[in-house]
Image 1 (tube, rainbow, N blue to C red):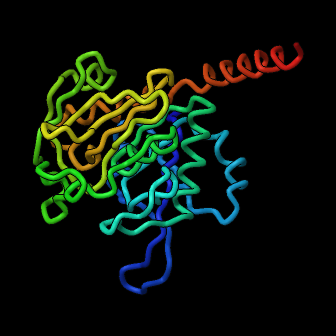
Image 2: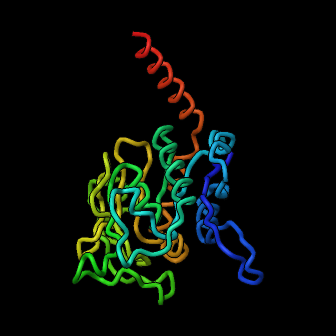
Length: 260
């Protein structure tokens, strides 16, 4: 069986009719399918308890790129350069991230998803790199094709990401204006741009929780190195039986502790 990978949707308007819709970029769907997974788009539910019917059926979670995260969620006031935010999206994705942490579900974060994992674990963000980190590279290259490589990322040679990609230095696209500032609990920073901006992180105590600031879904087709990331993610999702046994064991251990 191919693993089911949840991908949260964003709220938007249909380009022709301006009717409200939920959706996400096709590139994420195609990257997951190409690597062997089956994408499952998750809408912004009015009642998040509805997730209880869906989540036990998922084998993995992809937290995608998107708009900014509310700074109140990491203890800051909005910066003048803060972009669009959506409290409903933040609530959905934080619920999903915390579920994945609790249930040890394989998770891949991309751009906003990279930042959201850090916030879910108590970390903070730079709300606008250009104004808060002077003299850095230009990271918000939205005027260029999305697969344009614009800078190099240096990767910790001892990291899981380096092992997956088979390299400690790689060229990436760059389509963001925010980045990780203070790492969250248990977060290991594993990649930096040459200007010091965080470009990759992982949670070593988790079976597979890894995130990158770039957009590999826009590069995997013409760069086999980035395709390795999606393949490794899907491979980590293919053994739900093992995860079920782990959850049962954790539940039994928790029950034993509570009896004492």
